[in-house]
Length: 141
Image 1 (cartoon, one colour):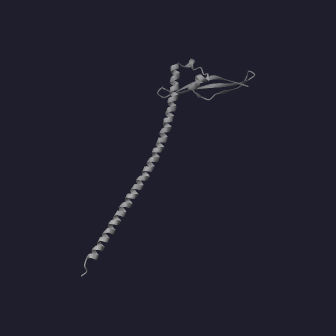
Image 2: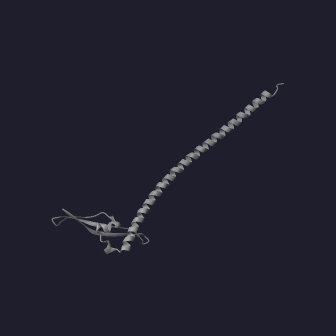
Image 3: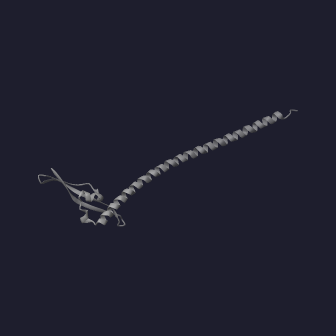
C-alpha cells in the first residue's frame, strides 16, 4: 500500500475588524494499492509556517510578504498565549502572597492586643503594689 499527500486546503480566518486572525493548511492523504485508491483521509490542520517545508505550494497562493505576515500572526498568537499563562501564574502568586500578608497582619493585631492586655495588667498590678506599699508606710494610730 502506498500513501501520497497532496495539498488540500488553505484556510484564513479573519477577526471582526477584518484583520487576519490565523490560517492553516491541510493535506489530503491518499492510500493506494496497485494503483487503486483504497482510502482518502483529510489530514490534520497544520500551521502555515510549516507549509513550504511540507510541500504546500504557498508561493502560488501568497506573496512572500503575505506568507511572512501569516507567520508573524502565528508567532504573536503563541506569544500572547504564553503571556496569558505567565499572567495567570503571576496572579496566582500575588493572591498567595496577599493571603500570607493577611495572615501576618492578623498575627500582628493579635500580638498588639496581647501586649496591650499585658500592659494594662502590669499597670493594675503596679497600682495595687503601690497602694500596698503606701499602706505599710502609713502609721496606724
